[in-house]
Each structure stands twice: as C-alpha cells, then as structure tokens.
Image 1 (cartoon, rainbow over the protein chains, first blue to last red):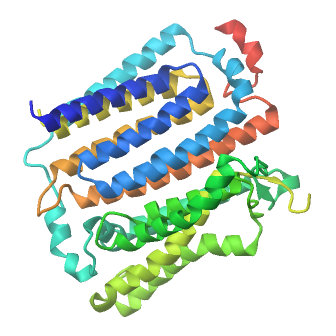
Image 2 (cartoon, one colour):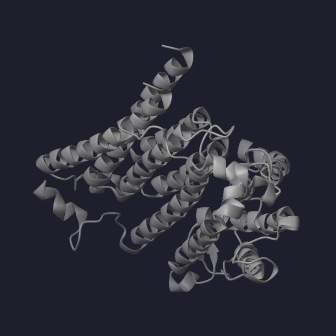
Image 3 (cartoon, rainbow over the protein chains, first blue to last red):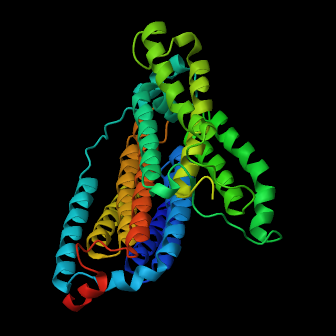
Length: 315
Length: 111
C-alpha cells in the first residue's frame, strides 16, 4: 500500500465519520458545525482528485457560504428543535429508509466498481481546441467557452433564487432591508477583522477571477470571496444591508447576467453562433464577461446569505 | 484498488447517508443539511469519473470538473432558497415542522 493510498484511505474514513456525525447527532447546531468541517475536508479531497478549481469553489461555497447560512438558520430555529424532533418517524419507517439508502449506496458503489475501462474522457478534445479560446486553464475554457450555455443558465438560476428569497418578504417589509441590523461590540474581535480583512479579501477575490484564465481559480471562487467580505462587514455592523428595492443593488445583481446574454447574442453576429467568440479576441471578450459576472456573483451570493427582507425601508 | 475507486465507493456511501438523513430526520433544517450531503456525494462521484478520465496532460476531465462547479453554485442557490422558505415558515407560524395540518405537540402522541 503506497503512502498516497494510505492518505486517501484515512481521508475517506474521516469523511464518512464526519458525515455519520452530521446525520446522527441530536443537536442541529453541532450538525451544522460538523457540516462546515466536512466541506473543508471535501475541498481537500477535490485536490486529491486533481481538481483544484473545484476545490477552491467547494471551500468557498460548499463549506463557507453554506456553513454561514445554515448556522444562522440553526440559531434562529433553536427553540423549535425539541418539538420537531418529537415528530420522528416510527422505527419501522426508519428501517425502511435505511434499507432504501443502503440499496442506493450499493448500486452506486457497484457502478463505481464496474466503471468502463478505459474511461471515456473529453480531456484531449478540451486541450486540442484551447488555443482558439486564448485561455490556459481548460476548466475556465469549458465554463466560459465550450459550455458557456451552462454558465449562462446557472446565472439565471442564481437570479431566480435571489428573486425567490426576496419574494418571501411580508407585505410590511416588501422591498426592505434583509436580516437584522447587527450591533456587536465596536472594539470586539469581529469588528477588528471586518476592518482589517476586506482589503486583503478584495485583492484575493479579484486575483482569483483574473488568474483563472491560466491557473486554478474562477469567477465563482473570486465572487464568493468578495461576497464573504461584504457579509463580514454587514455582520460586524459597519454597514447595513441595502434595501432590496434599491436601484444600485438591482443593477449590481443584473449587470453580469445581462452582459453575458448580450455577448451571447452578439456572438450570432460577430461569430457564427449564440455565445460564440471570434478567435482573434476570444480572451478579451471572455474577460469582459467575467468582470461584471464576478461583481454580480458577489452581489447575489451576499444577498442570498442576507436572506429575506424583514425590515421596512423607512422604519 | 486505486485511490479514485476508493473515493468513489466513499462517495456512494455518502449519498446513502444523505438519503437516510433526508428521509428519517423530521427537522426541515436537518433535511436540507442531509440533502447537501447527498449532493456532495454525487459531486464527488463526478470528480472520481473526471479523475479516471485524466489524459492529454490533465489530471482529470475538465468538462466534468466545470459541470461540478456549476452544480455547486446551483446547489447553494437552492439551499439558500430552501432556508429562506423555512425561516419564513417559522416567522409565520412559530413552528418549523413539515407535519401537515396539526401542531407538532399534538403529533407527539403518535410516535
């Protein structure tokens, strides 16, 4: 058994142990904390799978943002836990669920075990056409060029999710400010971090977006770091969440998807298809799309974390 | 057994664990958490398939890796919407249960 296999074995064991804890533990708060730790470990597994771009996104979104979102929800729902737990399904139902889950897991495991050999792959095709995109990172090339339609539609999903969260507002807070206004200790650690970290965070976020052309990174990972900085400043009470009816916020949310779709239609004229880029300045167009897209991702993720409007614009 | 196969089998178990949590835990927040675990297992299987497709100087199939990134973002968007719905339910009714029509304390006698 080689060292690298031993590392993977240990990691798989740890991953399963944390997953079992997340499912089995009584306290929802403990489950959420374990899930955030699980997300970070999964990010390491992505590095082991030679997918550094995914690892960055997983660490930022899968662990970080989901963790913060769930922690906030768990804290607010703390009082309902006991009542909800009393509605636990009967023992026989849990046995049926366990059998069902084991069957699904076994079927998937069998699929993994009997994977076709040699494995089908699009890697040679992705590398073969990379020069036409002007990029050096094949994952970015897939996201922004080969399968840009997926990325456009994913932006649409994000916009719809933001609209959905905003639409849940009660009448009195319609178009108002989301979440609560935090007033933590002005000399506390959180406030200190919220003043010190953002300059670095903004540089890292922009760098992740910019470097993705040739190195691991990405507009999502970059946008998430920017969103995290924004949320940190909001949580420290240094700024309030903007009212969702505000024009500036809506512009920030829409600029990325709109530019992306506009360039998509422009591709029908300047190249030969929707979302096609002319070979000579493909990279320039991709960067021109990615910059507003990163801004919109940051705005949308930040607003998804802030949640449903709960305070009227004029209190 | 290769590392990719090992991590693939681990992911299959993660999917099973997530599915069990989704069905067996009555708390909506825990269901959302379990669903994320379920999704994470599916993404990791994608990652394993991508790793097996290594070639042309790459450590994995970039198409599947890019799809996973898109999947992660969509999964987060869905989770955020689900959590917002749950918190709104709590705000409107004072409870956070999926039991239909009855108050959760009335349900306790059935279990």
